[in-house]
Every structure is written in C-alpha cells, then in structure tokens.
Length: 231
Image (cartoon, rainbow, N blue to C red; front, top):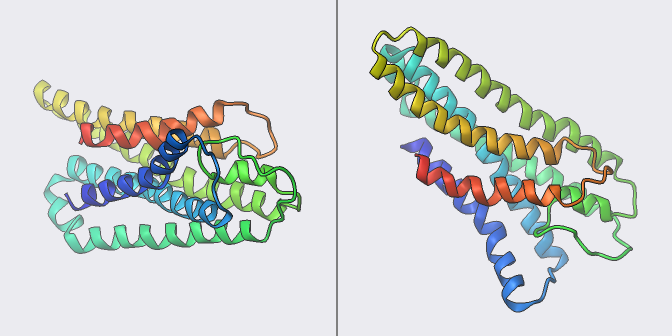
C-alpha cells in the first residue's frame, strides 16, 4: 500500500501537470503558454514521468519477492527498505528532470514558437531551438534512454522469474490467480513503456508526424487512468 500510495500521488501529479492547462486551452480557445510556464510544465512532467517509471520497477521487485520468495518477503521488503527504494527514486528523478530543464534554458528560440504538441514536452521544444541542441540530444539519448530502458529491462527480468515461479505452483487455481494479477500489471507496463520508448528514443530531428502526440496521450492520460482500476 505504501508503494501504491506513491504511485497514486505520482499519477495525480502527472495528469495535473498537463490536463488542466490543456482543458483551459480548449475552453478559452487560447493556446498560449508563457516561457516560465512552459519550463515549469517541462520540469514537473519529467519528474512525474520518471517517477512512474521507477515506481513500476520497484513494484515489479515487490511482486517478484512476494511470489518467488514468499517466506522471505516480510524481511526482504520491510517498510524501511520500501522507503529507501522510493526515496532513491525521488532523488534520481528530481535531479534528472532538473538537468533537462536547465539545459533547455541555455537554448535560443528565435523563430515561431509554436509547439506541435498539447503540452511542453522536451522533444518538440528541441525542434524549435535555433541554437545547437547537441548536448540536449546527447543527454536525451544517453541519460533519458538509460533511465527508461534499465527499469524496463529490470521489470522484464522480474516477470521472467515470476513466470518461472508460477509455473512451479501445483494448484491450477493458484496459477490462474497469480497469472491474472501479473498480466494486468504487465499490460499497463507494456502500454507505458511501449509508447514512451517510441517517443523518446527516436532522434529528435526525425519527422514522426502526429504519432508523438498519440503516443503521449496514451502514457500521460490513458495509463494513469487505468492504474486505479487495475490496482
């Protein structure tokens, strides 16, 4: 429940960063956002998106220990260790979001400042810059890519061992119950990471049309909406 509470808080922050401004734009007909407001939205979006990413990995670890080592669960996943895992996730994601936001402030925007997106995302902002974005692109591919791929691989590895543990269960009812719980979480993980990887691991200069916005809606709106239903 401690992990779920943090995931819920992260999801609330995730959608609160984007949806209110988007609804205001739709209701008022004005699609303007200030430079400071754009940077604020960029920072908090990066923070909560990364936090969701890390919390899903921590929850995968929790499920792995519960299913594969149930007798050691109370000792391995005690409250102190859960707090350390969540606190570490907060520290890493806060620093990562801050680095990307500060790197954007060094860019010059001298052309038409029209973002082809429904919020201030990093990739569309880099396309508008008229100064060199080499450092930003490098940080996006190396650091952001690493922080996205490593938890995803960790989740896949955890579920691989979970499946092996479930297959060793003798009771058909026990197998069915365990598989149903895992497939629900895994479907959300696949939706979140599949769309996020499609957006952020593509080179920023590549034309992807409106697919970036479709993918972004999936992991910024649909996934947080599904999490309360699933859990």
